[in-house]
Image (cartoon, rainbow, N blue to C red; front, side):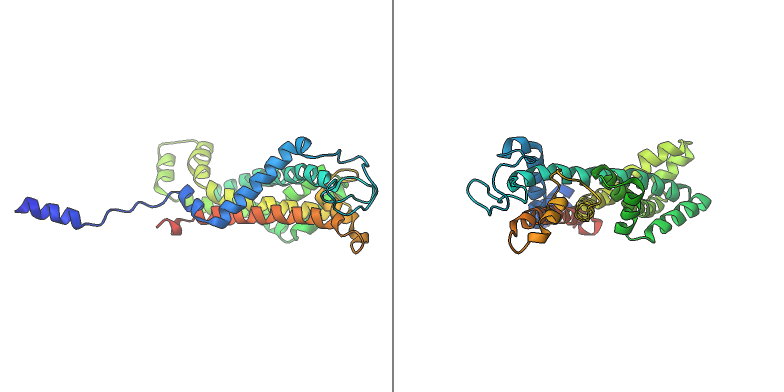
Length: 293
């Protein structure tokens, strides 16, 4: 009797649901998957640009300001260079700008936030005031100051955009570290005498990677946007480098007569920024503990 009752209870019991994994939650978001595919496509284009481009991006191959045709899909620019080839090669410059700028901002920002959050006290105060001073300047203005000091070039744009993003990483990591260092396993590592550097690296930072990864993904698009804006103003890449912001600037004076010169590089910038934002939003939702239901 009891055996049959137990079997009936087990048969009627609801199965225990496991929380979906990070990858599962990410794949459920169509916009995030679309952003990942689009960004991956641009990465492929950047790698395979020499094979995909029909012409040399710096050589004159036709008459200037020719509209899009079968021979020149995006038309030609003011000097008769194939715009399609220049957009393909421009993906290399822009993606490098985004990735390197993020790395230059993330590394010092993470270090500052980790030290400030872990040690607190005077160190936290000094680092926080330094970060607040950087945050007082808009990112584009801070980047302009760096460019004015170093001179216009694509390498200096990477440095400028990276410096402008340091305070965002520092504040994010500091807040995460302040919460993580109070957890029992961190306290246990301190009690057994583990060195501070080991505790910060192995027990604190490795558990604060999720928000940093999300911010880095979002910052790729922002870095490309800011870098293209600086090149548009003539403070970044210099001719004849095929950079999207510079290419957009070259066609602004003939926009009504030759709209394609600025339009296609602008659409390329738009697509990469949108892909980065979609991917970052999807990763933020995937890593959010409140959505692990």
